[in-house]
Each structure stands twice: as structure tokens, then as C-alpha cells.
Image (cartoon, rainbow over all chains, first blue to last red; front, side, top):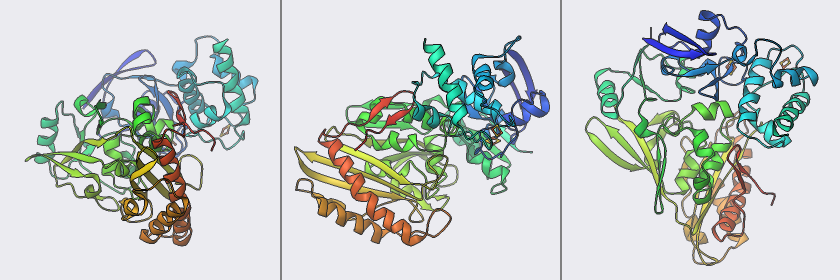
Length: 154
Length: 301
Ligand code: FES
Ligand code: FES
């Protein structure tokens, strides 16, 4: 079947089949390899993108359901020049080491910050609990997200 | 090749399920795609339910709550009205999976996948929920408990769909959902306990306990109302309800806990859940800070 959707502001029209996931479409077809291929079972969050502004694990999102949707990936979040405030905060707080979890983590954090979450450690940890990081120990990620919430609320 | 059919109405969806043998309804996809990927299922036709807007949303009419089968778990988690009237329901939604999973997963999918440890059945059972089933021969309504046939199995006939869940949520009723997990987040319940208590003043008129993850299907523990009703709160009897619930459990031993351990957890969590439900019923326990972002944030005891 054919689906038409917006990916990072660009119209995309593709033939997809039933078992094809949004992650397959993004990485294999559109070459948007910022979104990572982790567990493929919905557990790690490395494949997190925004669909209609809500965070989803793209590995379990059937393309066939996306006709008319708007998708934002880490590439779409990145300004033409420089970094977004969250990306810069991850750099400033050393919230990324190997970097594998980072795109998914930042997309989940973006949704969390946009949802108006308070600058509260427990709320941030809860909001990011679907994203695994094997390097940082999470504290620096929480610090980075906290700083952006404070900044945007200032 | 997996074919996907995209009906625009419930009638169309029922027609497609009737015409295509083995067609699987696709809701949020968090179970269907996972099962396809891990080889647990191999459907050739999926029927996408996501365009059936009539099956989506929360409706409250007087004391009656209706939740459409395609309502996301995230929507249930963040609904302040549901939190006030049937606290256990958003409380269970709040601990299911992760934000990403809750955005995708639906109530109908959670019920129809019939995982013994699923979060949503116990809280709905203690609210006396019924399910509206749509099928090729028209609709029928059954008590939620009758939907479950065993692990991964429902009593739905081929071609039938769950359309909505309904339950009464009177203001003299409090409810609570607690669970035991190995990990705090992104884990299935080792034990899921829901309790509801209805009161007249401070006197209990009825009490219900339902359990998940400790039997082939979620179930209501018999005899709790008889034990608790007609008197004010009695911690001894709540403890007895916990022992009854443990005796009624038949858990398996697995990575989330041994059968014995699970029974001990049931005995401990049931009185706690009943106590919170009772205090919510008499208005003496804050429902929790409700945050539209994070759902319920439990107040410390
Ligand atoms: S790759 Fe999608 S959650 Fe891990
Ligand atoms: S930085 Fe390596 S997994 Fe998070």
C-alpha cells in the first residue's frame, strides 16, 4: 500500500508492506540513520522518534498506520547551523559517551520537555525510563534535561 | 508479504475480519509487531484499527465511564477525570511500559492480548467493568472476567472485536492498583493487585480485590466483600483478605519471582491496596498529585 507522510518537514510518498516498521523506512529507505536500530522489541528506546509530536518506538510502529502523519527524527530536530538547546545541553553536561542511545534519548527528552514537565528529577527519570543508556549512568542525562527545562521556563 | 487493510468504519472492519480468515486486528502494534518480529505469530493479513475514531476516547455519563478500545494507555494515564473517579485505572496505565509504549498501546490491545500480567485488567475488574464486543452477528456485552480464556487467549469468536469497556464509578467508591516488579520501569508485573472499596460514611458497603500475573488469567478474588462489608475499616480483616487472595493464587515460578514469593507479595499488597482504596473512598487519602504530564504522582503515606 502507499502512504504519504511528512518526515522532518519533507513530503514522503512510499509503497510499504505490512511488516515494515517506521524504523525500516527511516534508516533503509530514507537514509536517516540518526535513529538507531537497537533491540527491535520496544525495550531500549534507541529508535525513538516523534509521530504527530508524541514519542514512539519506531521499531514497533507499522508504516501502514502512518498515512497523513508527521514524523520528526533527530535530523529534523537539528537546526541547519549549530545544535538544538537539548543537543547542546547533552554536550555541556557530558550526557553522551558512546552516543548510541543519544538520538533516542534526545527525542524522548524533547517530547518530555514539550509536555511541560516540571524541573523535577523523579519526573524526568520517569519520562525517560523507556530509554536505556549503558554508558552515562543517567545522572548527566538528567542534569542536561533539567537545565533545558529551567532554561525554557526562565 | 503481510497485507494491511485499512477500514474506515467498524462495519467495514468487521466485514474484512469475516472475509479474510486469520486476519489479525492491528491496534497500537506494540504486541502485534513484536510477536511478528519474534516469530510468535505470522499473520498474512492485518486489519488496521487506527482510523476507527469512534472507538477512541473516554466518555463519562453520570456515574458510568466508557473507554473506547482504541484509546491509548497514555490518554487514560493523563485523564484527570478518570483519576478522580476510578483512580486504579490511570494508576495502572501510568506504570505500563514506557511513555513511548503508552503513546502507542491501546486499552483494547492490552485486554485482547490476554497476557496474564497485563496491567489494565485488575483495575477494571475491581470496577466491575463490562466489555462491548462487536461481531459479524451484531454486538454483545460480557463481564470483563469472561473475556479471558487463558494466557494469550480470549473468548472472542473469530471476527469479533472489543469495541469499548464500561464501568460504574460512583463517588462513594475508591480504588487502587499496586504491583511488584523486578525493575521499576519497563517491566511486566510479577504481581498486580487492584482493590476497590465502596463506603457509606465510614462503613464499608462492598470491597473487591482482583489479581494479575498470579494465575492463567486475571481474576477477582471471591469472598472479600463478605469479609469486609457492613463494618468500618478493620486491618485484621484486610490482612485476612490478603491471605485469602494468596490462597486463591496459582502463580508460576519464573524470572520475576517464585510461586511462593508471589503468594507472599499478594498477601502483603492486598491489605495495602484495600487500605488506600478505603481512604480514597472516604476522602481521607489524596488521590495523589495529578499531573497532566506524568499522570498520578503518589503522595507519601
Ligand atoms: S530499537 Fe526500538 S526500542 Fe529498541
Ligand atoms: S552514551 Fe552509550 S549508551 Fe548512552
